[in-house]
Each structure stands twice: as C-alpha cells, then as structure tokens.
Amino acid sequence: MQSAPALQESNIRFDEPVRSLLRNKGRNQVWHITPEETVYRAIEIMSERQIGCLVVLSAGQLAGIVSERDYARKVILKGRSSQQTPVREIMSTPALFVTPEQTVADAMRIMTTRRVRHLPVLEGDNVVGMLSIGDLVNWVMTAQQQTINHLHNYIAGKYPA
Image (cartoon, rainbow, N blue to C red; front, side, top):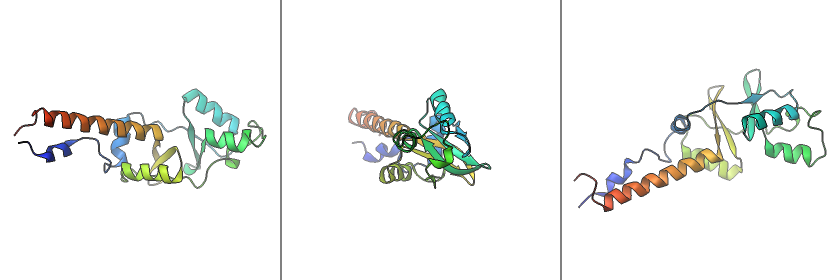
C-alpha cells in the first residue's frame, strides 16, 4: 500500500514564500506614479497597462497605492475632476505590503481581512513586485490541481512503493 506522505510533494503550497509566487508569476514589472501626478494620468496608465492599481512612489519610497476603487470612490462619486486632482489626495496610505519572505498564506490573510485587492512586495525599501487577488486565485487553483493530480496518481497506484 502507498503511503500518504507522497501527497506532500506538491510544488505549490500556502506556506511557500511570496518570492515563489512572484517567480511563478513571471512578469514582475511594477508600474508606479508620483503623488504629484494627476489622477487622470494614473487612470491613463492603468488603462494602457490593463492593471487595476499603481504603486505611488515619492523619492523612490513607497508612499501609497492608488487603485480603480480609489478613483471610483474618491473622485467620481465625489464629483471631483480627475484632471485637477493629484494622486496624493486619493491614494490609500499607508500602503499595506508583504515581504518576499512572508508566506502566500500571509498575503491571502492580509488581502482578505483588510479587503484589498493588491499588495506591493517590499524588499527593504524597494518595491520588487505586486500581488493581485487574481495572482492568489491562480495560486490556489494550481495548488488544487496539483492535489487532484497527486490523489489521482495515488489512487491509480502510480507512486513508487
């Protein structure tokens, strides 16, 4: 009879560091804007890049994050002008973030409990990546598929004795 510990061989786990998720994600381009630029420019960049948020950097340091949600709630619904409003007036600050050493479970917990859809990844003072809720959903789906494959192989007797 096969032993169940073989099921622990999955490459995708929730105790993996965020660094692994970024590596699997591949593209780690982090788009940013300064607090002085207009909300219009921020929305323009998000549209061009097909992304939902931008990191806000001031003198190279993380100052906040601006998202489509910030735009909808703090500009459109307030009747403000996106061409006149600086990003600093609507950005979410302080920005929540994770480090590459924190686990995928940590990132999921922060996003769930704080109800955010994006998390910058900071290594020291440098933004080295951005996680979205979609990245975490893909991680979960991959983990589930690997578990299904391991269970199928276990049941079919394809694991070595």
